[in-house]
Image (cartoon, rainbow, N blue to C red; front, top):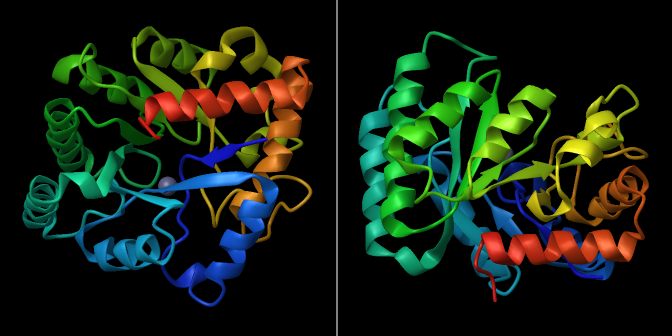
Length: 260
Ligand SMILES: [Zn+2]
């Protein structure tokens, strides 16, 4: 079984002490690649350091997270763009980018502006996007349609929205949905509607580590080896053998992120 963690924050302080062990456990579980979303200009050195540690395993994204913008966001956005233009081969995706109305509505305008700018990078570079959207999925879909739904592909990562929002995402021709440990939570409503509404060929999996550890490790630091629990839960939901689920989800990830 081959697994790709399509969204995981394995660089930085949460994993500074034992990253090689985390990677070893991931590989033992069948994880062959981990895609690292960037947060802002300041996180780039940590991102590059982690990628250098295991260049055959880690793949970097570049982008600015909507809740990590700061005062100097316009300047930082420019820095990130120059980095992307100078080193396009370093990055497999634009991420994570998006809108977050859950934490703050004050920044709504700035978030929308930064998001649209970064969508144009994706369109122009033909790289996929990893989208963070919290209480803002309909606006995120609108932004993608504005910048060009035919020319942008990507993943709405950590999907926890309603069926209505899922259908809006699926109407975008080149988008998939990222499912993580939330699917295994007792109170999650995802297992009630995902099998009916989300075709398996539009689904990828992720940890969003260090957050959202699946049951039975809920509450602990998450890591890629835990994706086996997410695959088990998907197999139950979709009533398919776990190997079949793993195979399809792996193929989706390879296609979406143009991995070799
Ligand atoms: Zn993330």
